Length: 209
Image (cartoon, rainbow, N blue to C red):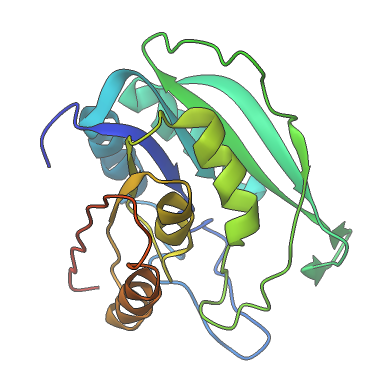
């Protein structure tokens, strides 16, 4: 990808928590962190100056994520908590929230009406991906942080929720996914919305695990 070609990055990378769903599904590369710094260095490179990246992350590896963001050149300019009505896991405490940091490249303009940093979560049922993110949650984030008709990139796009959310807000989109099964799911979901009147762009890159 060309440097400084993306208007907004919205992504949900592996949390480095060795995730295993109730039915035994796992996430590729969730058991190692060697990809973390190179991935965010590339995200910083392709993002336009004065633009934003919103990344979900795992609390258990917050130090590693923050280190990778800072090493790439990002500044942390916001933190969003998404509250759940259910517990996704229960150990010492019940896990009833998701979190994401808002990261800046350079000095982006501040929105006229900043969104709340505590937001509701909508359960997807994880039918398409073991950690599937809800389109209803992602749409307002794209509308808030990506300019109209801008290009949204998700380099860990999973089942394509970010891409569909970008479609529904009239933005162009680009997705990269490692797992061929999830890539096909994302292709199907994107194609199902191609009758929308807005102009779109997309690509998928597959790499061996």
